[in-house]
Image (cartoon, rainbow, N blue to C red; front, top):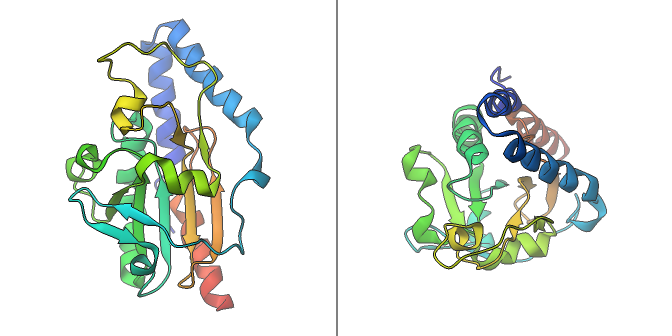
Length: 219
């Protein structure tokens, strides 16, 4: 069992922001997350037992990653994150690299972290020297099919040349995936899903490992 807590890191990040951020900025961030939690409807996304249809992702070097290639040797864990510059994602993915990836690798389970960000801007893997695969979901196609994407209610005005979400992802929109963990068996069936509408509350590594252990007992 792991001892490091991802959500404890998020709590520390929020505490730091309480000290450093202007009150209006902090309250806007809190309100955005609270609104997403209120709107979250678990019946609108893919469910355990559903079979995920074939899909295609693109790795940062331009290589194509298909569902069938991903599942060729066994189950896989998909972790959807927002984009490479997201502060919470820069805590989450290194955490999964430390606390989740070693056990998955030893068991022959693939791990892929997925963002709509265009492949050439997906540098989070190299910056943190992550051992697992990072891939782009162009235009949120897979995320939208799964039912996990969202757009904030209080979108800020966009000015040409601004470094806004749509420019970072390459989609030209505010649409992002909600942080999501999806565990697939080798047939593409969903054996576990957890969507985190509050991006400062995400799935712990132990929860994912437990889902895989339960599946191995039932197989």
